Amino acid sequence: MTPLALFLLPEALPLVLCGPLLWLVLARRARGRGRDPVEASSTRPAPGPALSCAGLSLLALAAAQPAWGTAVRDVGTRSLDLVLCLDVSRSMLARDLVPDRLGRAKDEVLALLRRARGDRLALVLFAGEARLAVPLTSDGEGFATLLGQAEPASVPVGGTDLGAALERAHAAFAAEAEAPRAVVLLTDGEDHEGRGLAAATKLGEDGIAVYAVGLGSALGSRVTVEVGGEERYLEARDGSEVVSRMDAAGLRRMAEASGGSFVDGSRSLHPLLELADGPLLALRAEADRHGDAEQRVNRYAWPLLLGFVLLVLELALRPRRDA
Image (cartoon, rainbow, N blue to C red; front, side):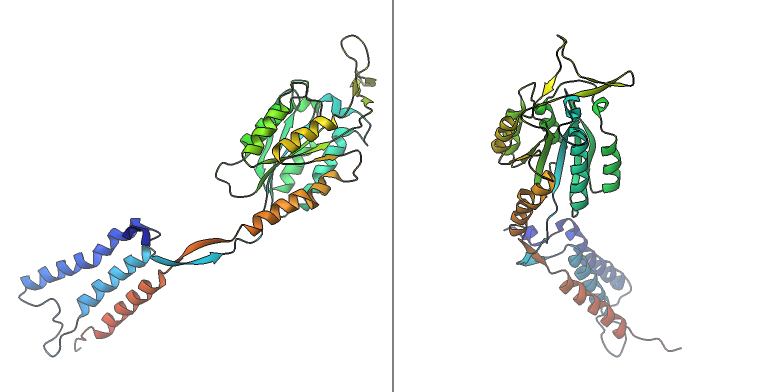
């Protein structure tokens, strides 16, 4: 270990030279006057200048924060960084959930938001492409406002690209963050581009689990859209009605590839709260168990106290002039 490693702020070490330099200046002035720099009176020598210089050097040493020995630091309960990927494609307008898949997803996110304990949440909206609607934030009120505005028109490109959603979620995390990270994917699981599995695997390699919440039924449902103020069933290019089915198997593969898990939203009363009370709670607890860390003990108080004592002593020993 180098001597500089004994200090938490070695950049302040040059200030320690202020004391000796001040002593040299005083000594030179004293020699110019024909006196010893420690001579304070004709009756007794008082080491006033020496005490002042030593005190200043000790204060500078305290600023460099000398540290030795280690102590265990308890970081307390960890918060989470969660990126919620919300599918806003038109298939999410299917009404096999009440009021529809998208509406049910929003309700679940609001319930999770109320359960958040200092967690930071981000929101990615996706269909045929993905965009970051809310960066990581602990502002629950602002998050809820922007969540309420999510609709199919929020993403102009149609389709469902789960790979784009997961890649955008990956980029939303701060690289230097220490909080446990996870992605929650809310979708009917129809991965039109087929890139979701690869993106989920990449997240898992970086220690970020994907928890997928499947919205809709395996039997499928027709998709209701509004055209000219009237509700109609969405039709394919050949004129047939579109039937959207939740792809539970595909979502489960994606989640497990990243080390996460899958929840069937059609079989759970509150799938996001189920995640919060299960895997996400376990993730938080695991972070708490490994949260204690050893760190060097900052001993700045010792030179600070000694320097202060020397300065006070110098004042006490300073010769008094008779009035």
